[in-house]
Length: 103
Image 1 (cartoon, helix red, strand yellow):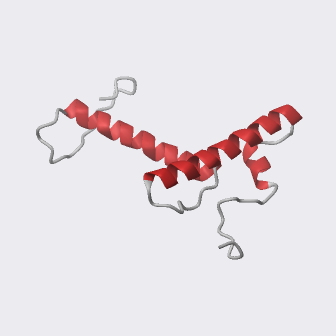
Image 2 (cartoon, one colour):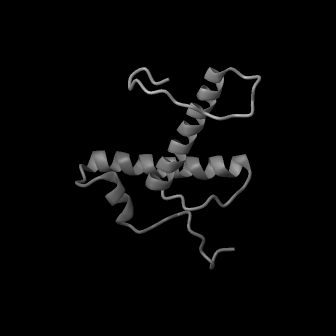
């Protein structure tokens, strides 16, 4: 139940040994993960993850976050106009794109 919006939500599950509130909390956490990946796709320009291991995904995500933050710092220090998304698109450089000349 969303007390702020006065709405009741109904969820179906086949897990009968877990309290309803726990199921709702799990779904809420899952939704936060989905929102995080949406933000990553929109802002960090990660089109695909090139590795499948947890370490590879974390490494690629941290590199993208680092670049995003470096550009944000440059934008602020240089007082660049425009939003961060536009500034990230200007160089048209995406370090995560595969280059066939590098093996």
